[in-house]
Image (cartoon, rainbow, N blue to C red):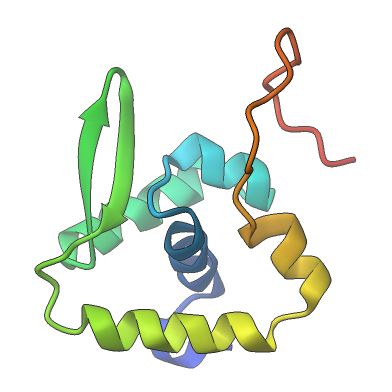
Length: 114
């Protein structure tokens, strides 16, 4: 929906994911969204360079979050919230609803959405 503004549907999906999960890392986004890892990583770094996101290390994982100093952050979040309202419910359930309970112990951690 925001592809003409963002320049890419991938950017929109990444920002929606971070909006709904508060923070995320490249492997998590690529696994859940079924996108190429290197493409996600490239866009995350591009969004960080643009000042929209910032990252921090948690152990060996680089987590990305919205940059609270980004001038248009409230407007961007409002726009993304509006997009979420117009997405099909199935898409929202599959991609943008964070897990509310921990994984079952011993469960395979690889994402398999087949």
